Image (cartoon, rainbow, N blue to C red):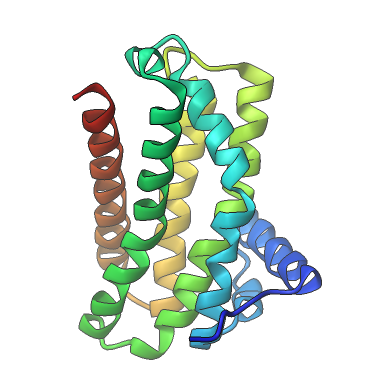
Length: 193
């Protein structure tokens, strides 16, 4: 299988579109994510790009919690495994869900936009952590606001790409959220056993 690489200029364009769509829900940004399977594969570079930020945020949020007593290498390896699961579970679920929605042609654009938006979300989370610090393993009220915005983004993305009613978009966002919480719970279960 051929590796789908993304050039720095192409990545910069996708990241710019991700920031614009994430912050303004500008429908005009969606075509910039592409609509081919190659675009989907390239979008998996976004989680790779922000992996160092993600690890830093996660390990910083672990400070002072029960997880902090787990050896650093064990936490890092467990977090890498959880991150890998987190990055692929929803795009894989969306293969089936796009068919159920009778919109398989929209799958590539949805997943590409979904993946690239991890960049602005991670940058904003880093800004919150640096600006406000962590509070008992969370990002406090600013982090809650970011979580709300992420859920709203997922609803808007589903509405705009799949052209579905609001109830369906909310159900998709809720499914994604709860599966993400399952991954978080599994990570904690592994670490705290």
